[in-house]
Image (cartoon, rainbow, N blue to C red):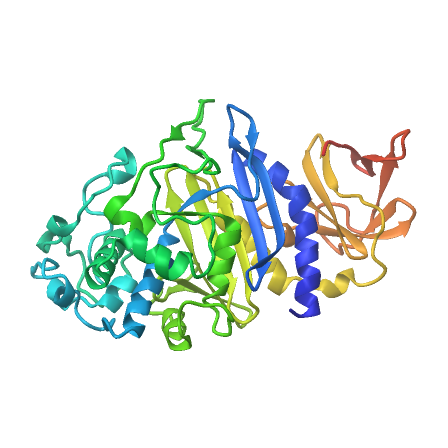
Length: 450
């Protein structure tokens, strides 16, 4: 890992420690886990908030989350393993292995759909069928009768059409070819070899005590939020059943890097997985989809990973292929904060100009949340400087002010323009026990609250 990224990981860690506890309050997020890892080994791993709000049980680093569509990464790896063993070819038709996978109309013919098209969401079939399992938690135990002419939405190979049903079909292929149950195959070929101690392919009969509650949103005008029940996903396990921890997913993602020393796939399989097969039409067309993986470029780097949405859980994981850095953010409610934070962290790692923070590192700890009439301000140390930004920002780097130390506890705002305090001084005040307790600015006083 180069020195710039090392410095930036340390810097963003300082920011996250101070910012996230307030950020989850603004976003009504009960609990959140973040892991920043290198080669699957955690460098920064922190928990914020609660796994059980009523009992006031704090979430910890080993908390298990429903990671939903992260399951697709595991399923894709399983399919590629079967190809390596010569038991299938991903450009074979699905119907060759599953005769019930058929149906034809004026748009397309399901017999033409290939395994590769299922993997890359190019099959054109519907997203979830019509069983309403996302609302009633009654996931289908078998999908054979759901595949017909009614499952065809677009012609296969013509566009990106995200489909959980496609990945449920891939799970059926794994079972048909391996002769094993999907969960047994995953345990034997991926989970155990990678030593993923807290990972499950579906909800087990004996529910782990570390499994967090999953909470609904706080609706306007209401104080109570729904606590979602945990349920098995059955035939949908290969699309959305997985449960895991941030640390386990860091290990799994690192294993997909081409140079990884610990992997369950060969290099050629991994190259095929990380090749984009089409744009997902998000972020102005910058994000593509490979085989079970989101593909995203940043600063001439390639990020791979996946997101997941399950009732009461939104999760996001990314992995820098060239630098072998993993960023995993799990939340236990329906919130986009996981994506927001993972985007922010990688933006900081690759786009932050750390030259402005060079110099003698600050020894005093000014970090904290400072509250005034106009809002809450985050102060965080980065190298020789301080940065300040609003506690409810989407990305600190996009709006921060940088403060340079000029005398004892006095700093100067280095901004050259703006509506804040460009060029002006701020001063940190101490309590009788010599701890920083407030911030004095020309426009007013902010009390330290965290």
